[in-house]
Length: 264
Image (cartoon, rainbow, N blue to C red; front, side):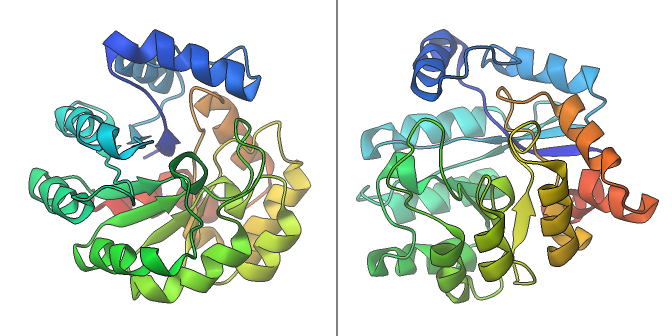
């Protein structure tokens, strides 16, 4: 089984507008799919990916319900697993967590840059504790974002410091703990009780650095991720196979770790 743990798409009515904004903001002008669910699933089929996990983000408090309505609408779609999102400035963030849990959503995506909070702010701890209590997987954008280069609101050091708030509930650091920030990923996250995903590492991070982080952290806590539409999952799969891990470790990275984490 192959699972792409970190992808993005939008409702059909706003996909073109959202993609245009993101392309201009990031400077990535040639995405691999058009931001719709149908195009994402076409791309995943071409790469022989069994499931794509869609990481929705509530970028402001007023958008939170619509973003999660979209996530919930994707439940039951073949080959996709939607995550929800809550915004820390939303008055009903906790109530929204309960709604997502009742609907059957498995995880929560937090993007401290887009949502304008530092991940280690004290005010965030109760929200983390509630997310953990409800049994969600939490995925954090970690490190620099191509569209929001400064300041970085969640890096390996800050993220490491808040892991106790989750009490052992699963946490995922995107981009191998920070895009092209190998030293801090190794210093603060390698070997810790956290998963790392490989989102947007293909052609952005040297293969030797990717292998070093995976080797230090352990293949049992690495999740294949493309960050589609910004990478092609086929290329990300090829990168994992290039690194020279054992067949058993390859299987873990490409899907077995995610299958177990998602309860599939």
